[in-house]
Length: 182
Image (tube, rainbow, N blue to C red):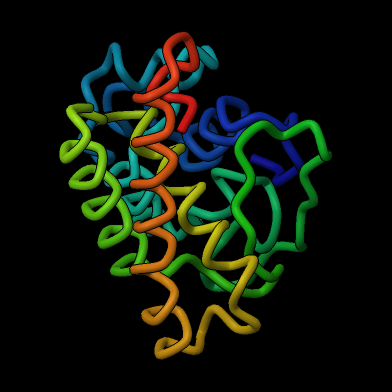
C-alpha cells in the first residue's frame, strides 16, 4: 500500500495504519489491548485511544505522537516524510517534529492525572484521561525549553499537577461549570 497522508483526524490515521500494515480490525484491536468494538469506535471517530493503546502503536513502528496529532514522523524509525496536521486538530500534543513521546513520562503523567482527579471525587478513564494527560503534557511543554531535559520536566510535573488540582477545586466550587472542564 502506498503511504499517502491520511485525512487529519485521529480516526483516519488509526485506520490508515491498520490498512498500511494489512491488519484486520480484530487483529489491531488485540495488538493495542482494545476490544473490537472499542477499536471500531476509534475508527469511526466516536472515541479516542487511551494512553496505553497509543503507546502500543510503537510495536507497529508507529509514533504515538503522530497518531494523536498528525505531526512529526509517522514511523519511529523515521522512514517517512513529516506530515503536518491542520490547526483544526482537536487534540494537540506539543512536541518537535523529530521527537517521539517519552512512554514513561506519558504513563506517569496519566497515573498522576488519574490520582489527582480521584482526590477530587472524579474517576477519569479512557479518552477523558488521555485528553487530561495531554493537557498536562502541553502545560509542561509550554514551560520547558527542551522536553528531553529530564530535570526541567520533572521539576514542572508537581507544578502542573498542583494547577490541575486547583482547577478541579475551582470547578467543584462553581455550580454549573462541570468538573470535567477543569
